[in-house]
Length: 327
Image 1 (cartoon, rainbow, N blue to C red):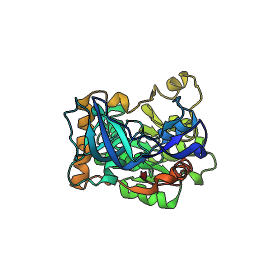
Image 2 (cartoon, rainbow, N blue to C red; image 1 turned 90 degrees about the vertical axis):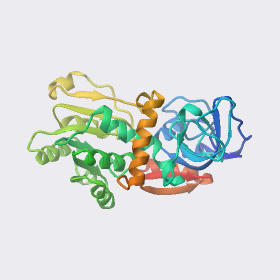
Image 3 (cartoon, rainbow, N blue to C red; image 1 turned 180 degrees about the horizontal axis):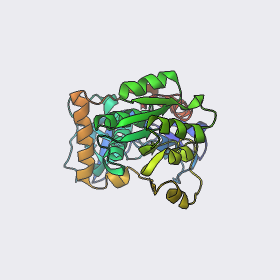
Image 4 (cartoon, rainbow, N blue to C red; image 1 turned 90 degrees about the horizontal axis):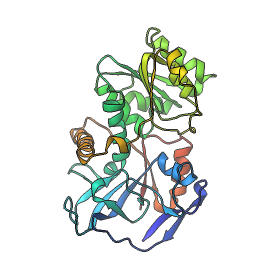
């Protein structure tokens, strides 16, 4: 089969299309013919060496496709079933092995591209609004990168739960997408001379001087100080990504001086730690797609051979919605 390997830690140029042996499922594994693979920032962190992984490795951890074979102990699915997954390595390939515990059965009415776009970013958005900071009617929340893959889903889910969403975006096109997703207010951060001081001032103007109850921050280094300063007393900063780079070490006393603030750095794995929780989050998302209440935007697709271009597009922050690779 053909697959994309990261040959060493580095930039997108380390990604190579190679012929590798077809994988064979172990006792608790499912072999899937990949219809679409999700492109996520965690793929770039593993490719670049920010997260330590072995090299070479087949890139990607999210996808959807058709089961072609199953291991001897697998009972959840059978050949011919359509499945998706959020966190099984080796998705940028024509065939992928997925652990049975990670398999999500794709219901009728959800196509392959939506099925591949939803697991990682959709379940991330779901745990953010249900668990990290449970959003309710009357909350004001700030969502950074609101036109990105997680951002558009998060904005929809937060607005549907009754929050007033203040979104940050970079362009007029992205502002339109954020508003369509349910953002009540949109701030274009590129128009600010000093994000750290001007963004909190704008947020407080929009909230009667109080600040927001929660900030959902996937950007990291560039927005962290502004996020803290935008919070109301006893507000929560949910730092769930680092697209601009990791946040440097900081003094926890800033949480005290900022108004007894809360800071959390969650991951999807800890919010899908049991099969019941994984299925609950996926079921609510798939049901919302089928009901037409959740829009999953696929902003760009790339053929397998152009995986490096997909990474460049994602890292440039020029994309909207989900980026997919189509083997």
